[in-house]
Image (spheres, rainbow, N blue to C red):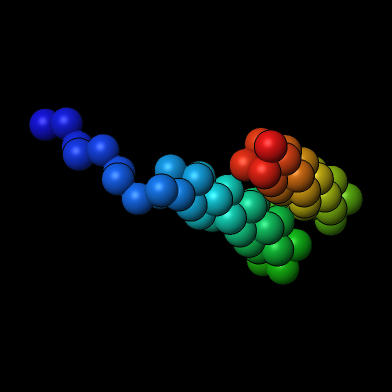
Length: 70
């Protein structure tokens, strides 16, 4: 069953912005959880994974904002 098209002027752009924010929030949350939860992963590897998540969140945010504004 196909959905009806969005007739609001900025509907698609606002949906994309919401998805962008959700993606960045999930990446930041995972990075935070990796750092604070006691897991059997050594501390240096946890730091590397958390920094990778933070870098990915920053890159996705910047690229997404450029795409939505341009």
